[in-house]
Image (cartoon, rainbow, N blue to C red; front, side, top):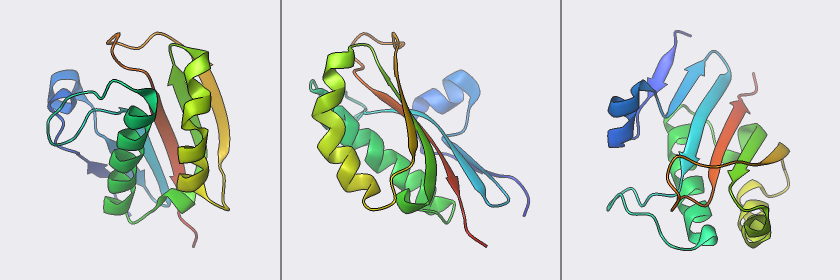
Length: 127
C-alpha cells in the first residue's frame, strides 16, 4: 500500500507542514494532537475536555486510515502539569477499553500555555 497522508483540516497542518496522520502499510502514525475544538478551533479550559477533543480528533484520523482506537499499540501523553494527568484516566480507559496500548506520560511544556495535553499514537492494522 502506498503512503497515505491524512489531513484533519487544522490550519496548523499547513502552517507547520505536517500531516495529522500517515499510514504506511499496516501502520498508522498520528501526530501529537491537542484538544482544540475542531469546529471553533478554541481550546477548552479543562484538561479533561481537551483530552476528550484530542481523542476524538485522533479517532477520526485513525478511521480515515482504516483503523480505530482499538488498533493503537503505543501512546505518548505530553502534559505541562503532571498533576493534570489523573483527570484524563477515565477517558483513556474508556477510549482504549480492553485493548490498552503501551503508554508513556512525559511532563513537557507545550507550544501554547493554554494547552494542557497533547497525545500521539501509533496503530497497527492486523493482517
